[in-house]
Image (cartoon, rainbow over all chains, first blue to last red; front, side):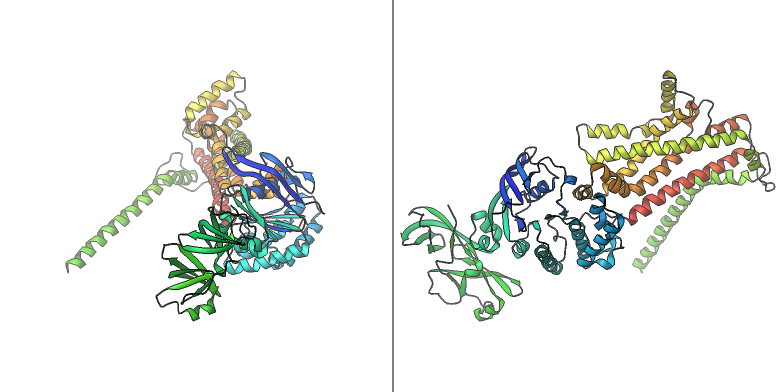
Length: 360
Length: 275
């Protein structure tokens, strides 16, 4: 068993009265691509800044590579950060920006130049080496910033929402650049983002934070299919969250009475007793929709409110007779069979296995 | 028809306003520059008194000041004072501006108000206070007493210019340098100073210009070490002599050059390297 590259032990960070991070325990393995995700103010950036030494933990310990980092100043660490603002030096050209870290390590000019050029070439911006960084496009600047951080060959690279300023089509391209680099270099990426698509697309493991605490850690698929609590279920989005009371327990199924009607939900752990209040989640893409009543374990009759079209996938927003909003996600090509522009009732249905019971 | 009439009348009204505003601007420039222009013109006029019509063209007054050792001493003094003042004031201004940029502390607004205070004190009061203070500590009548006094006077200008530039700096830039392995001092040298360079150069030239022109403090504090403005007053006091015009022209050229260079560095360079 390898020792983890990074560990947080009971790390707390307070700014005056405000607690940015509370009681954080997290270990990150060498070579892992980990994404820290959460809404703004959840403590994800503070966590990253503590790794870079830009903020010091109020309590707890941070180890990198077995070494206690609490009182190591930023410039003595090898934890380059790719900034949201990129923070390129405007008075230096692209090559000089990349050389900066090497210059601070007192490498000679020829070596610096060669390494910087290699990295700029590798990231496809070699031709802009002598250009003022202000004259480069967003995507080119992004690559220069990445080269600047990687040129010192760190074991750990920190990224703070690096793609948030890019156009959508560039984000997708940079995502593949990043994942490929991470795999080729075998270094550890800690990637902070508020974007679920970025985190899920790239990371081996995702850490979801809320109010300075970890809400869930897991592989993207697990987080998506089995959210650990209501916060994660809501944050991940495209989930229907239904609360109700258990009225019957049969074998491994629960009968749950809610204001939407009666539902059957699998409970493999068999820990829930009758009379308890529970919440379950049914992902929008696991709901089937039809224009005629369905022969499913669970079904709800709804009317269509609106639709959201994102290329190949369409999300329908529907409302039940009790006024609850439900979401269904389906392939665009399936939509044509529904005759959805005509008014009238829609029937939603799902298997009792598709629903995920949130731990109480 | 009536509509057409009213548009004509408003266009006449606005044209009138237009012309009167232009006239106003011209007048402002006339009042600022006419005396200087006259002084320049009369410095090349052979007549002893500034009267019109002009007599013949001459370089006599320039020759007179060129051959006057007092003028040379005064120019030398002024140059020493303004160069030293510029260096000290800009260093002080930079440090204050950086303190303001980097740190938050109690009574910071009081600190800033105190720092920016000197230029608002009437010069004559400041000059008297400086004289009293310097003679008390036995430092009056020296060239470096003028340098100290001028540094106090001009450091706030340097601070204001450099502070403006620092406010344009991305907050992450300094942290980014630390993150890439630069110590705080190295960051100062490799990032903060290069970023502020246009403002620093501009502050150097501007403080030099202010110091070069400054009269009241110099007159009180200088003792026997006259600077150019002090010398000018002495010449005028003695007799009416067109060599004053010649010296004035020279001083005007020097300060204008300094101010224009400062302006170029601050607006053009700062604008170019930051978007």
